[in-house]
Amino acid sequence: MLTESNQLRQKISQQEGWISIIVNLLLFALKYWAGIVSGSLALIADAWHTLSDSISSIFVVVSAKISFKKPDSEHPFGHGRFELVTSIFIGVLLILIGLNFIKEGYEKLIDRGEAHYGWIAVVVTVLSILVKEALAQFAMWGYRKTGSATLKADGWHHRSDAISSIIILVGIVIGRFLWWIDAVLSVIVAAFIIYTAYKIIKSSISTILGEKVDADLIRQVDVLAREVAGREVFLHHVHLHDYVTQKEMTFHIRLPRECTIEKAHQITSLMENRIREELQIEATIHVDPTEVSKHQSLD
Image (cartoon, rainbow, N blue to C red):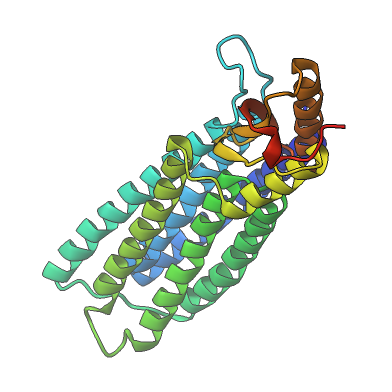
């Protein structure tokens, strides 16, 4: 059964995904049409960037369903990391799109291709900026509420589209004076897309590989452990395993060697319960013996 936080995470991810798919398909059709009418490669590139947002949002919807499947015999820690795999797919998709438009922008520059912007291109581009930033804000709100890496990736995908549209709008303003501006802008937009993809992929891979435990989290756990034990426990050897939909933590504490197994079990069980309730982390605690002189009495 999903926890309340995971239910919220799944609900928001699915909502954001479906809204994004519908809106981006409409924007793609509008921007592609405007690009054809104006002969702008940069605007057509921006249209395909928008379509890639729809594809990435399909990943978001699929990820929201698979990531929250119950643990099974093959995946005892659940399927949450599928969300990270999804965000990597989104990043790779962005890189392929970016490289393609660098190639097309270069070819247009060599051929001295020129775009003929008009009011249609202006209206469509301004509309795209407003809509894409609204989608980005919604996705980032979902990320802040749930911590979903896929929502964060999708939010940056939307924002990269909004920024690329701003660059194109600048090109529309000065395009009448510089024949090469459309080709150059398509390359700039592509470079921005690739940089965004790099950040998405790097963040997801870092989580999969495992990261250093945040110092603030260690301090929180140490405070809880000392409150339960009623003494200094010398927290050490802390590891955190992030499975996205759940987190597993292991660490060592020191208790007096005179402490009975029953008493040590009671203390560590209380610590694990507090950490689960207050930090939503499943903890496994190892006890090391130390001299009683370093501690208060167990009673």
